[in-house]
Amino acid sequence: MRSEDGTPGGARESRLVNRNVVAGRGRTSMRLEPELWEALAEICEHEDTDIGELIRRIERAAPSGSRTSAVRVYIVRYYREAAAEARHRAGGHASGHTVHGHAGDGPANGSHGAAAAGAVHDR
Image (cartoon, rainbow, N blue to C red; front, top):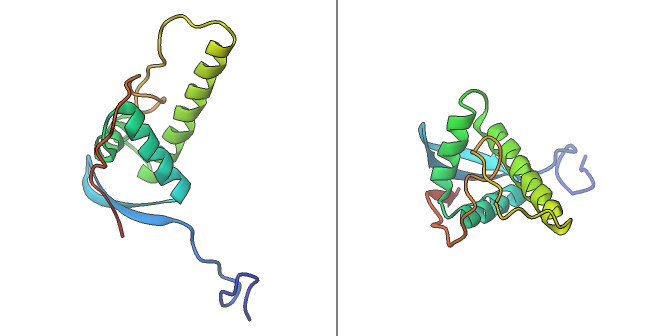
């Protein structure tokens, strides 16, 4: 029996992309959706860092539990904080400061610049 997408037995192919990263605990692989890998690349560019350093920051802020879960939570917090700051500025409340935080809470710094791709490789 085939499912609607043509895979046997109703099983669906995973959308997750497996990539190797070098982080605090050494070289490891992570499986994330393509959109989350894109979000990490955007964050790295905005924060002027590479993905290995960003993952190390996230690990330091959330040392227990799943690395991929911590990364997903970080991405959501990062974009929520950025959206809140944008709403704040749009409301005429700009105070001249940028949103700052640490890896567990969102943007690590307000810097802009090109990011090194870091130690990320598709598998």
